[in-house]
Image (cartoon, rainbow, N blue to C red; front, side, top):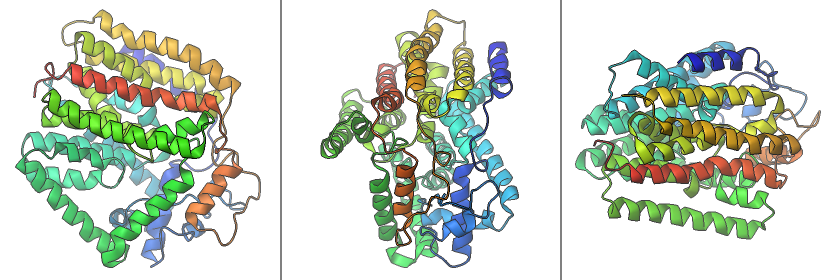
Length: 464
């Protein structure tokens, strides 16, 4: 743990880069604004959120920096309550809630692992693994609800193992606050308890949606908004989907979309076939679905990889031998913000230091008896990947929103929120087709394939 502590201190002191433009927890800005608009009886998915966002400290009100709300109506009561607080206070409350979510994710995974909660060192190392990882750092820094959703998935898995209906139902409902992450729990629907909990959560979600989102048509209207926003963002640099990465390499849009469709079908089909063929337990089948999820969705951001920390952390605690080798490689590929090196070249040293913290935590978590040569695998993998990624990122720096927006940029008055967001991405240069950016984003996506292999290989080594 000494190495992890030293790396963490360096990451947040000597290696800490200058902050990007705007307020802390930038994505929370959209949640807060949506809650405020909803409280006032307005449309939280419209451009009305900009009226709130432009008054938040750190936002450049002289240009359009609209950050649209694309969350579900069911989450609006929560964000509406936070929006009744002054923004600086609401940010602190929300950050504390996300910190608790990170701890909840760790405790839920530890409850699934044989080590349980016997050693305080294990809890600290597991928390360091989550918080120092690229997805964990991104989720906390952006104030991303994805961390809350991932904690819900982890707790649902843990509660279902104990057949605890009330906690599992609530956890499933919490997971649904990020609709692109919750579908992995479909893979867990293999016993009566899971089906009952899912049904109760769906009913609760539907009722909340009807209350907060405009009556019986709220669900269909929200689905239409998601499709619209996904279309506006489908090829931009912040997307980690197979289609977006294919487009970055210069492949025509139609072909890139076809590649994304084929990857999605293949990911779903292989998950089902492998689960049946290798008789994976309900839990392991869900872990495999988690690994496959980024390959199957048309909308996936870097912070959404926080969901992958669930199987990574569980295998870090339990895997041995060949399975641990594959898990170490997957950890090196998934747990680093590779595109961040291109978007923030001055943060490269901090990203390396945080990767060192994650790897040190991985090693500590595996020392049930003694360290093995397999523990060195993620170290070697990181050295190789950084040796390639850092020069590539420095040669092809990527813009970051909203820093790269032109001064006094304004979208067309007739554009809706999704169109404004698409226009901002274009104005910032984030829709450029740059193969280097595609290669950096492909690393964690490929890491999910490696993770899936580790889950299948370890099916007999992780006690059910």
